[in-house]
Length: 207
Image (cartoon, rainbow, N blue to C red; front, side, top):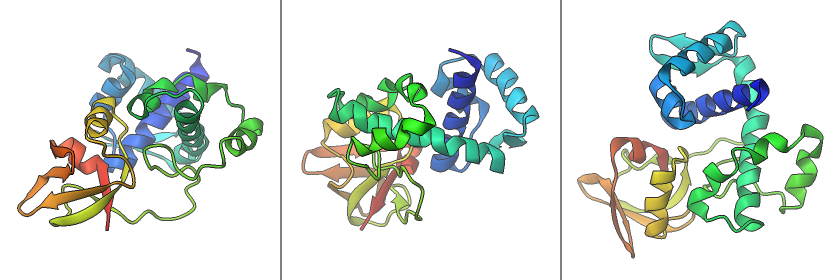
């Protein structure tokens, strides 16, 4: 993987973690990219030197410049996920991990054509925005009151989370229910899923 791709992957990962949890940290970046903590620490120092990220103790954030760089990378990634599901018939739960190399091959000048040929999707298969042109008003499963909802999106596209949701047919747009005094369990007609804190924060619901 060349330096440009490395940089894009780090920026994309930090963006996704910040979108899901408010900030990133070295441990989560290391796990997501499958590289050592030492490698992550060294590379983050490079990004900090280029003023693409900023740190507050252990928390990592994108700067305005880093955010601007991340948006086209995220858009390519999410449209590539649509391509993987629609054209390559990659299972929904594996589409995030399947396109890690595809997204780097899309030149900016071809993005609109690529998207158009897929029907100009507004979201990725996991419900996340492609164009960032409006505010998403949803809540995470851990803070939801008891009641019936629709699953809106899965912000942190971790394969383990996606596989569990797919096993129960819990996709964006499908009805789910949160039970009284038990926000750590989400259910539908196919069964129940106990949510660790990490999962609960990333599963977003709407009424």
